[in-house]
Image (cartoon, rainbow over all chains, first blue to last red; front, side, top):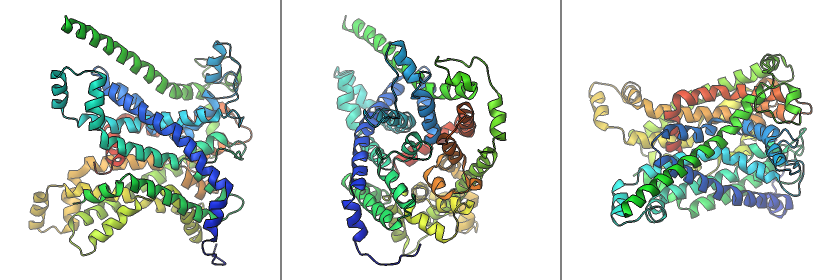
Length: 255
Length: 283
């Protein structure tokens, strides 16, 4: 556990030139490209629908919010063993069967990468309610006089959304995008639980944290490289956060 | 004419909106339905090629069998999860509450420096610190102990930040009255401030409890021995094991989420507030 030799920036250079580390960054990017826009659009859509609903509003809100209480492990279990089970009794293959389509081995193939569908939908289900609540709070803060003014000007539907709701939600949207990105960057639970079988994880689809987990705590126990990787990842996240101006806003709040 | 059309239009969009909501709600409930259905299925019905909407036979022995299964320490892991979640929730509330109050109210030369240091750590995602944290905890000899699982999670920068912001907005006149009555900071905090902040405390508390109960990476790294498994680790081990009785696995998952579903049912208001407070810090 005690460092035996000071290697300078050696570990950092090793990490940056390690194809497995770089491929974990590519995996994160692919994951983010799927999960960030879909979660954003669906949670905003759910918030808009729920906000305008009077009858049973709290029921619908609770239904979308309920998965927030569920753990990634339990969701992974339902997705892996029930919805996307490779056999006919899995829900997805059962539905395909009604249309005469052959069963798809969702998780056992690297190519075509059906596993992305499983992983993305699981996280989507778990997260949408959380961000819907944030959007709902944002929508409720929009002054009704803005909508009244728009109604007098004859604006409705899409125009109201485009020119009033969306600009008024800018602060919420920025925060939601940043949170989605940071959370996608830290994805671990569903990858680990959905993709590993019999205690082994496939060589592909390793996002940064899964990669770090196996580097630092796997058979290698390579804390030096693991820590260097963690520092590099932290720097990437910090840069993204600074670019989004979050530091400035957090600093201003206190005054 | 225009008014009539827009009325009909709004009725059409109203119907479209409700249909979309109902379809989406059903989609969101399907996983819960599958979980409950599968937990009460017999193993041979789960594996059969036909999809069953309801269990042909309601099998309750999955529940009793679960607690008799020596491979999965279900009772022990539930106890561990409960202990960890309760102590972490209470600990975070006390530590972050006191720290937040001190930063908000007690004049001190370094209080801004301390506050900005705490705020700066918010930029470091907790998950990437797991390697150095693991090295620290294992040096202390806390691997596979409740101490190792609980203590590192007691110091939450976000909760401290939120408590400070909240106490800054607490009506100062009330505190001043308490000061005149001879209560110091300590007495004012416990006798005046806390009883009048229970809504906020409940919001932070419920969110902390959920996060703690559902945590996975840290318990996976620290909980090496079976005796120190949380319920999430027990489930995960069960899920990735060689031979699995799937129906029992679903029953285990159902048991694992029941406490949170109950909490959700009774405390949803505070959970919603907690999400609003923690999601967009200080907004």
